[in-house]
Image (cartoon, rainbow, N blue to C red; front, side, top):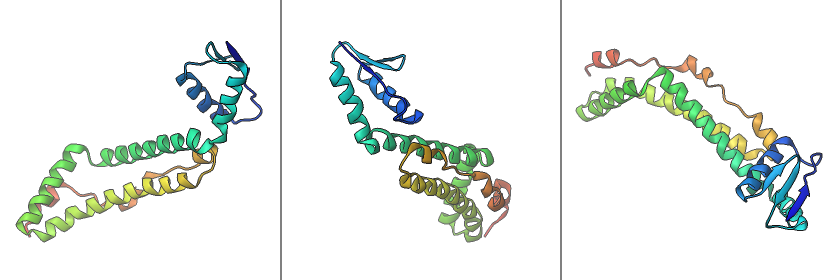
Length: 168
Protein backbone atom coordinates (compact mmCIF):
# COMPACT_ATOMS: atom_id res chain seq x y z
CA UNK A 1 0.00 0.00 0.00
CA UNK A 2 1.52 3.27 -1.12
CA UNK A 3 1.05 6.87 -0.13
CA UNK A 4 2.72 9.88 -1.75
CA UNK A 5 2.27 13.48 -0.59
CA UNK A 6 1.81 15.59 -3.74
CA UNK A 7 3.90 18.77 -3.68
CA UNK A 8 1.71 21.70 -4.71
CA UNK A 9 4.36 24.37 -5.11
CA UNK A 10 6.04 22.59 -8.06
CA UNK A 11 3.12 22.55 -10.49
CA UNK A 12 0.38 24.80 -11.76
CA UNK A 13 -3.19 24.11 -10.80
CA UNK A 14 -4.08 22.93 -14.33
CA UNK A 15 -1.09 20.55 -14.37
CA UNK A 16 -2.18 19.06 -11.06
CA UNK A 17 -5.75 18.65 -12.33
CA UNK A 18 -4.41 16.72 -15.33
CA UNK A 19 -2.32 14.54 -13.03
CA UNK A 20 -5.32 13.86 -10.79
CA UNK A 21 -7.33 12.80 -13.86
CA UNK A 22 -4.51 10.48 -14.88
CA UNK A 23 -4.15 9.04 -11.37
CA UNK A 24 -7.89 8.38 -11.18
CA UNK A 25 -7.76 6.58 -14.52
CA UNK A 26 -5.05 4.34 -13.06
CA UNK A 27 -7.27 3.33 -10.08
CA UNK A 28 -5.45 5.56 -7.65
CA UNK A 29 -7.08 7.89 -5.20
CA UNK A 30 -6.16 11.51 -4.55
CA UNK A 31 -7.24 12.65 -1.13
CA UNK A 32 -6.11 15.67 0.86
CA UNK A 33 -3.16 16.32 -1.46
CA UNK A 34 -1.96 12.75 -1.20
CA UNK A 35 -1.86 10.00 -3.80
CA UNK A 36 -2.95 6.61 -2.51
CA UNK A 37 -2.82 3.17 -4.12
CA UNK A 38 -3.28 -0.22 -2.49
CA UNK A 39 -1.22 -1.85 -5.28
CA UNK A 40 1.87 0.38 -5.33
CA UNK A 41 4.63 1.39 -2.96
CA UNK A 42 5.42 4.94 -1.88
CA UNK A 43 8.44 4.98 -4.19
CA UNK A 44 6.38 3.71 -7.13
CA UNK A 45 3.82 6.47 -6.59
CA UNK A 46 6.52 9.12 -6.44
CA UNK A 47 8.10 7.74 -9.63
CA UNK A 48 4.68 7.75 -11.32
CA UNK A 49 4.23 11.39 -10.35
CA UNK A 50 7.72 12.38 -11.52
CA UNK A 51 7.43 10.46 -14.81
CA UNK A 52 4.08 12.02 -15.60
CA UNK A 53 5.65 15.47 -15.63
CA UNK A 54 8.72 14.41 -17.62
CA UNK A 55 6.54 14.15 -20.73
CA UNK A 56 4.27 17.19 -20.36
CA UNK A 57 3.71 17.34 -24.13
CA UNK A 58 2.02 13.93 -24.26
CA UNK A 59 0.52 13.82 -20.78
CA UNK A 60 -0.91 17.33 -20.64
CA UNK A 61 -0.54 19.52 -23.71
CA UNK A 62 -1.86 17.17 -26.42
CA UNK A 63 -5.06 16.53 -24.48
CA UNK A 64 -5.49 20.23 -23.69
CA UNK A 65 -4.96 21.19 -27.35
CA UNK A 66 -7.50 18.61 -28.47
CA UNK A 67 -10.08 19.78 -25.93
CA UNK A 68 -9.60 23.44 -26.83
CA UNK A 69 -9.64 22.73 -30.57
CA UNK A 70 -12.95 20.93 -30.14
CA UNK A 71 -14.25 23.91 -28.16
CA UNK A 72 -13.33 26.29 -31.00
CA UNK A 73 -14.92 24.02 -33.60
CA UNK A 74 -18.14 23.84 -31.60
CA UNK A 75 -18.14 27.63 -31.16
CA UNK A 76 -17.70 28.07 -34.92
CA UNK A 77 -20.53 25.63 -35.63
CA UNK A 78 -22.79 27.37 -33.11
CA UNK A 79 -21.95 30.76 -34.57
CA UNK A 80 -22.83 29.65 -38.11
CA UNK A 81 -25.89 27.74 -36.89
CA UNK A 82 -27.20 30.83 -35.12
CA UNK A 83 -27.10 32.84 -38.35
CA UNK A 84 -27.95 29.99 -40.75
CA UNK A 85 -29.82 27.13 -39.04
CA UNK A 86 -29.13 23.62 -40.38
CA UNK A 87 -32.44 23.43 -42.28
CA UNK A 88 -31.62 26.67 -44.11
CA UNK A 89 -28.08 25.49 -44.85
CA UNK A 90 -29.49 22.28 -46.34
CA UNK A 91 -31.96 24.14 -48.51
CA UNK A 92 -29.24 26.48 -49.75
CA UNK A 93 -26.95 23.54 -50.43
CA UNK A 94 -29.69 21.89 -52.49
CA UNK A 95 -30.29 25.13 -54.40
CA UNK A 96 -26.55 25.51 -54.98
CA UNK A 97 -26.24 21.95 -56.32
CA UNK A 98 -29.24 22.47 -58.57
CA UNK A 99 -27.88 25.82 -59.77
CA UNK A 100 -24.54 24.33 -60.72
CA UNK A 101 -26.23 21.37 -62.44
CA UNK A 102 -28.60 23.62 -64.40
CA UNK A 103 -26.05 26.30 -65.27
CA UNK A 104 -27.58 29.05 -63.13
CA UNK A 105 -24.22 30.74 -62.61
CA UNK A 106 -25.43 33.91 -60.90
CA UNK A 107 -27.58 31.98 -58.43
CA UNK A 108 -24.64 29.65 -57.70
CA UNK A 109 -22.31 32.63 -57.23
CA UNK A 110 -24.79 34.25 -54.83
CA UNK A 111 -24.98 31.14 -52.66
CA UNK A 112 -21.24 30.62 -52.96
CA UNK A 113 -20.79 33.83 -50.99
CA UNK A 114 -22.24 31.99 -48.00
CA UNK A 115 -20.00 28.97 -48.56
CA UNK A 116 -16.96 31.25 -48.65
CA UNK A 117 -18.11 33.02 -45.50
CA UNK A 118 -18.56 29.70 -43.66
CA UNK A 119 -15.06 28.72 -44.76
CA UNK A 120 -13.75 31.97 -43.28
CA UNK A 121 -15.42 31.20 -39.96
CA UNK A 122 -13.84 27.74 -39.94
CA UNK A 123 -10.49 29.32 -40.86
CA UNK A 124 -10.62 31.26 -37.60
CA UNK A 125 -10.81 27.96 -35.73
CA UNK A 126 -7.86 26.62 -37.69
CA UNK A 127 -5.90 29.77 -36.90
CA UNK A 128 -6.61 29.21 -33.21
CA UNK A 129 -5.44 25.59 -33.58
CA UNK A 130 -2.16 26.87 -35.03
CA UNK A 131 -1.78 29.23 -32.06
CA UNK A 132 -2.46 26.34 -29.68
CA UNK A 133 0.26 24.30 -31.37
CA UNK A 134 2.77 27.02 -30.46
CA UNK A 135 1.86 27.04 -26.78
CA UNK A 136 4.22 25.35 -24.37
CA UNK A 137 1.96 25.48 -21.31
CA UNK A 138 -1.73 24.99 -20.70
CA UNK A 139 -1.89 28.48 -19.22
CA UNK A 140 -0.71 29.92 -22.55
CA UNK A 141 -3.48 27.94 -24.25
CA UNK A 142 -6.08 29.54 -22.02
CA UNK A 143 -5.10 32.90 -23.54
CA UNK A 144 -5.98 31.75 -27.08
CA UNK A 145 -9.49 32.74 -28.05
CA UNK A 146 -11.54 33.40 -31.15
CA UNK A 147 -14.02 36.22 -31.57
CA UNK A 148 -16.37 34.92 -34.21
CA UNK A 149 -18.51 38.03 -33.98
CA UNK A 150 -15.82 39.78 -36.03
CA UNK A 151 -17.32 37.83 -38.94
CA UNK A 152 -20.66 39.65 -38.50
CA UNK A 153 -19.39 42.41 -40.77
CA UNK A 154 -18.66 40.02 -43.64
CA UNK A 155 -21.84 37.92 -43.40
CA UNK A 156 -23.27 37.91 -46.92
CA UNK A 157 -26.80 37.55 -45.50
CA UNK A 158 -27.79 34.99 -48.11
CA UNK A 159 -31.49 34.13 -48.15
CA UNK A 160 -33.43 31.36 -49.82
CA UNK A 161 -35.89 33.91 -51.18
CA UNK A 162 -33.15 35.96 -52.83
CA UNK A 163 -31.47 32.83 -54.22
CA UNK A 164 -34.77 31.68 -55.78
CA UNK A 165 -35.30 35.08 -57.34
CA UNK A 166 -32.06 34.74 -59.34
CA UNK A 167 -32.93 32.82 -62.48
CA UNK A 168 -29.67 32.90 -64.37
